[in-house]
Structure formats: structure tokens, C-alpha cells
Length: 106
Image 1 (cartoon, rainbow, N blue to C red):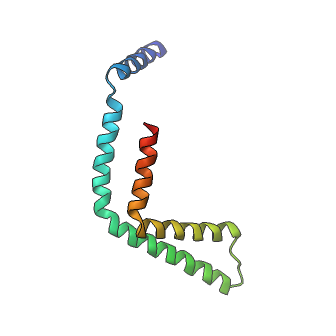
Image 2: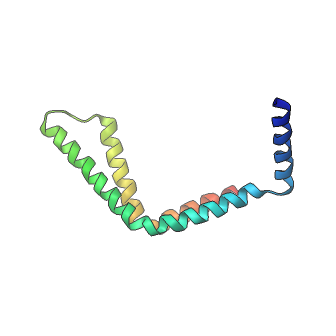
Image 3: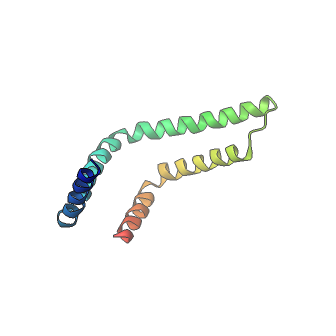
């Protein structure tokens, strides 16, 4: 059983050197997924803002009940609010940074 699995693995490894199908399949899948996610972008942004607002409300509500939120949760809440702000107001800057990072790896 192990020998047959090793043989199949070696065939896949050898064919990946000659015909790299996996990167093409990954690229096609990523392109299809990004086309789907672009249509959902406005809804995802609204959901992000609502969830961040809910997090700030829960933090404020905890202070009203004399339960102080931890520093880590406060930091993560502010960090996520900052990231959502950047993604909403500067999407092209983020896209350029990702493109530069991916081009640098090639």
C-alpha cells in the first residue's frame, strides 16, 4: 500500500516539473473567487462596519457594568477598526501593496 502511494506521489512530483498544472488551477480558482467576492464587497464592508460598531458598543457596555475590557481586546478592537478604515477608504493603495508584494516574490 505504501509503495503504491509512493509511486503515485512520485508520478505527481515528476509531472509537476514538466507540466505545472497546480499554479494554473490555483490562479483560475482565485480569479473565479475574486470575481464572486467583488460582487459581495459592499455587503462585506457594511457588515465589517456594523461588527466593529457592535464591538465598540460591547466595550462601552462592559465599562458601564464595571467590567473593564482587557488591554488585548481593546487593542484588537482598535486595530481592526483601523484596518477596516484603511480597506474602506484606501482600497487602491492596499491593492498596489499586495500586487507589489506578489510581484516581488516571482
